[in-house]
Image 1 (cartoon, rainbow, N blue to C red):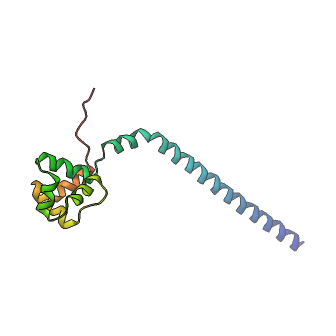
Image 2: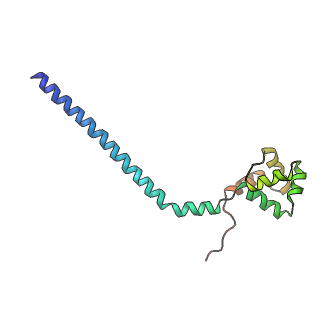
Image 3: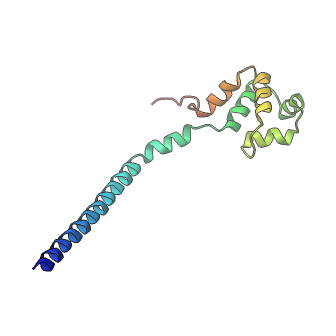
Length: 128
């Protein structure tokens, strides 16, 4: 008699554990589906951010052009090759910290302003 009630209790415990595991699996699947739906709904926002995000190279080129400087002039001023400046502007390579500080000084802006420009929006588009 004792053996039969022990096995019934054990069977009930195992069944409850299995139900709890299945419940967690179902909960995880539902949360995953919710996250995917939210991600899919944010596609427009992600595209807009990608369009407005500026790379460091774009910011450097914009400042160089604004200051009416050539890549050759910037390279000579910093003591690097023109190809290095070109690589920075195309995003193939990034300037070292010392070169970034020298670029900022050459362009008449702070290094913080150069880096902040990377994350800010590109010049505002016309609102129609």
